[in-house]
Length: 304
Image 1: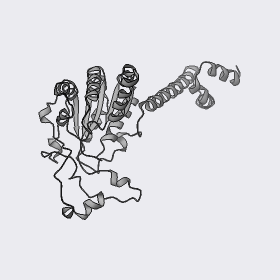
Image 2: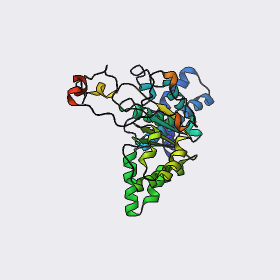
Image 3: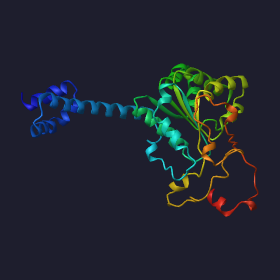
């Protein structure tokens, strides 16, 4: 059979991986005097690699990440307090297989969204489906569904993926309708799918954001007590991304919403557990005591 005829047959069978490496593998087989089975095995490996790469690219595209981030890109040295070992363990995606969730909490700029998207990227590489969304965007989408009668199919969109990433959870108080939507979402995904949630607030502060305390207790009890709790603390990364290349890299994030009980000792970080009681979580209040303009240091005014 002529090579052109073989290429036609490979196209018909949609074996593009074999098609693109056919000449290379044929030359390799002749140089190394490979047998027919060894030659065929090489072509099959090429086809499998091509299909796996294509499926991975599709999963990443459908995840709708803001940016493709991985833990390999994370600058662990910038904030040594970041629990690197805990995040790397979570990146093995065992929590996805067990239908557990991950709560990433801490002040602004310490890498919560990066870590969430990195866990999502790891899940994509492990063959899981992922969907990333801002919490406010999802709530707006579901509100639109209530307006035009498409609420149920819109909700199913957030239930179908193996991992749902909700970024910036609890930025403001929820309306009664938003609270009901979150209740339905959390209850439907409980023990059926995983969630990765980022927030500037401690989970213990989420309860007050719900107008109905009974609804809050029912929803958050499922989420909080079936999740791994990861506290990220340290300096904000964002000054390093300034266009002028400047930034107060030595300025600690002392005025960000850390809790009054925060301890820089990494050994006192919350342990990774799917059943951590709420009273062991650190509080991250979103407001601080106002200060007069004359009391603020020049460094703080520059940062703003």
